[in-house]
Image (tube, rainbow, N blue to C red):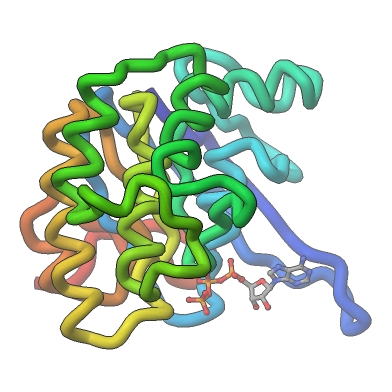
Length: 221
Ligand SMILES: Nc1ncnc2c1ncn2[C@@H]1O[C@H](COP(=O)(O)OP(=O)(O)OP(=O)(O)O)[C@@H](O)[C@H]1O
């Protein structure tokens, strides 16, 4: 589903190149779930951006659904992203001019996979039944992030990429939202790559890896 082979990435800084990924290898099978952990600044978001083809490696290859992302033009990469991935970030990135149900429908339509039954099911599971016509600004932070997760899962993507999805929420709300995210990923039949600092979130997933000094490794027990 997702494969990194010898991936290197550095950023240009006034002090010279900042080496972030130094030969990362990773294979994620369809339906597999992986927690990506690591210190702040270790390159977790960089890895997720490369996985989504939002940025390209300096060296090595990233393959998504069998396609080498660097070999595709940006329009083709964007289409593959829409059809294959769900993305959830710390900021919710909801469409403010669309109500709850239209935020969900838009994403499914863009991916070419609308399913009214699944959308209705999602709204109920997200605790947003009765609020279908509300706009995001009228929802609480936790509700907005639940909606952002639901939107990403509306097309039942092959893989959900989530970058510290509850980083902006208080601890109690975050726990509930993350538990719901894991359940919905399971119901959607999606794979999951989630950046998290929480051992409780990481524990039930298939695998856990830690990014440190540019390399991925098993975390200490
Ligand atoms: N566009 C950029 N230009 C220059 N440096 C960058 C850029 N993006 C990220 N960096 C630097 O690369 C390093 C890795 O950043 P990244 O955001 O991938 O880490 P992270 O593990 O996700 O961190 P956090 O847990 O704090 O979100 C950091 O030192 C960051 O400052």
